[in-house]
Length: 139
Image (tube, rainbow, N blue to C red):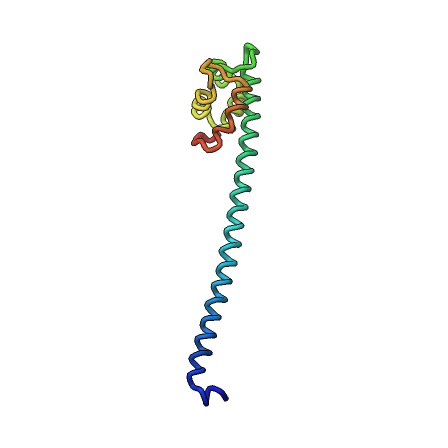
């Protein structure tokens, strides 16, 4: 055949086959990497949705905590009311522990009390809770 007459053609075909193999492997690798990146992005979005859902759930629990612990019915929870209710009511303790624990809740109370009044209202809570999405508090 042709390789007997033109021996240099063997080099051409070997290089062509080698180059085609490398190109094909690069295409397969690119497809695998792109699929992995898409999966990672979808996971990240799903985690963010889950975090947002958890934040909304905990915010509602905080509203419930304000309603249960607000003894003077002024729709605002003072730190004193919170601590009194925490030590007196097992249900309040359970809510606090499910939200984030007493220590983190006290810190959260200070951070959310934007006006410095010493009380936490439902409006303050709903306005400020999204700010704590990436906060180290386990809220």
